[in-house]
Image (cartoon, rainbow, N blue to C red; front, top):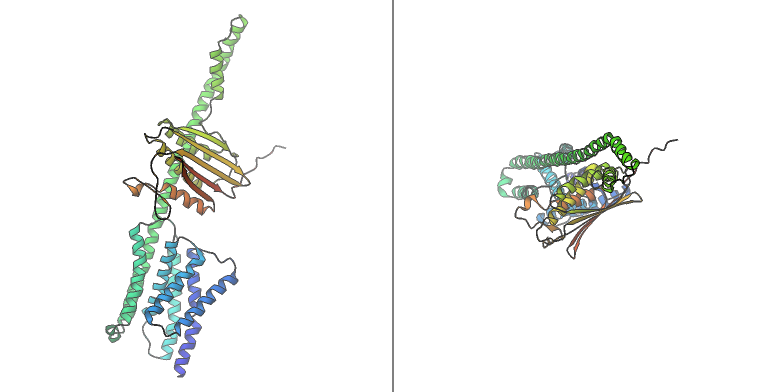
Length: 429
């Protein structure tokens, strides 16, 4: 009787380590929604009371396992993050906790049981620590549906499988097989988790490389435009003296100057550097680059830009937003059935917020999935339909707002980016 009391006492002593391990793992994978420590303590105290109640309840083992999985999954909703990643993290934690407890050798004495309780919690923490340290990019990027299936199924089957094995008569006859199987399944789950993370790291690096190439193309294009205008300007400056001498001679002789000559002269002076001349290098580069692509299809750009040149914009964010939005607009205007070929770009800056609205006509029917997201109607869906998702993701990551609407054959993307700083010009004293 005393032994049972000691075992239960040490079980309760080590049990608070479980909420700590869960919070440690979630905190390093996601951002907590619980802003104060008091709220954090309350939530995990309630979780602790729930698992204590379940431990002393008379419910069947399968129901207890299901309820414990549900509680761990429920805790993930107190953190910000993609719902699929939160569920994957919860399943991985359940597998880690279950397999850690069963991977240690069984002890048939009170001292062995107490030691097992401490060692299993220590093993859980070490594995959680290793997981979050090795898998540094958890939650970034996107996986194909088959990888998601693997991430869902592997920890689920591991947990249910080891539970079934441990309760079978065969395993009870050979108890040493339980820790061996548990250790093997634990290693498999860790490897799959880390493998998917490495894939996301590679994918993220490829995306960054593509964005960098795109940004370089924007800047090179803007440089060439500027260089062309500068060359024209140098040529004009070189010839201006001779032109003025000729005009002076005509006026001196009483001959009327040709108005066409004067118009050409003024035209050279007013020749702009591309269609966008807001003074903001990033925005001008992207718009001018896309306008050159649109000009080949006789698509008109209508600009309404009221932004300071000194905006401190994240180059990646604005490249993804303008690049994808203008690519989609150009593609819609290229449809032969589309009689109106224009793209309107409104950009305004007010109260440290940048407002962006891009409009274009469209003729194709727009399809949406059950979540209301726009779906591509192209045959090769794997290479299309990701532009709007990229915009939504980068805006959400920047804590901005995005609204996509399509009415009366007019497609519109509206975006607000908050806390966009603007450097002040250095005033000369």
